[in-house]
Image 1: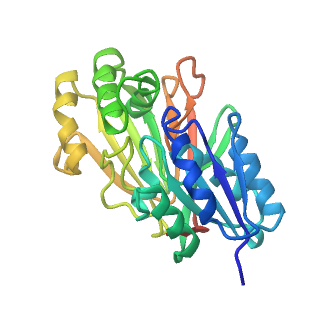
Image 2: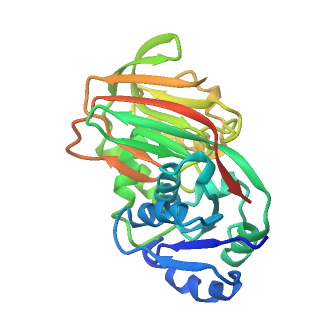
Length: 302
């Protein structure tokens, strides 16, 4: 039976560079498909939720990790038995989730892959904040340092791709070296520490190529965490190559583990991003976060 396909395209992905990639893809969609472009924040979420209500079989997110994040949140609002499968055409600056999922990074080939690929059940994370926010996530939730990197990366227009994130990392080391004290419950275990960064991982990488959690798998029914304890600016700089190669587990000030549910309280307001989208930035009043895994929540076509 032919698929009913909804294409959701973010024309301003990767600072608008995605726009010129769209035109050749229209002809690849099967008859009866629908093409929608986003026009404002969370528009992709609304379109995806409507696509589920309208009986679409496949929703394809064309954009970066932020577009995928919005589409995911729209799909997850639909009942599981009416939830369309997700496909991705990566045209953003990082494209970390699609890379982790084995999606080719060339748009035309990625669309063909989404239309004819094999569905795979993937896990989805769910997070709650003490300000009442709730969101689903596919790849990572970053707290502290990597969120500040994401914030700074939005203001570096000269370069793109991995170079944006690398430049933002250097800026964050200089300007925002602010450890926070946390109390954490991981399933039934408690610990506390002073951290510069804590990343909750369903996928392996973020920031366009930083291998934060090389062992993470988005279909293993468990989430991973990686943290960097309080260290100097110089040591943080020297730590970067390890996160680029995925060798940070050899460092004594880097912690890691797995969990199904996490609860966190911080003495400082938390800077949080998820899947590259800034959830709380400067001016944050969030001090508590909980996160859990929903195993096999979504079909991803690749």
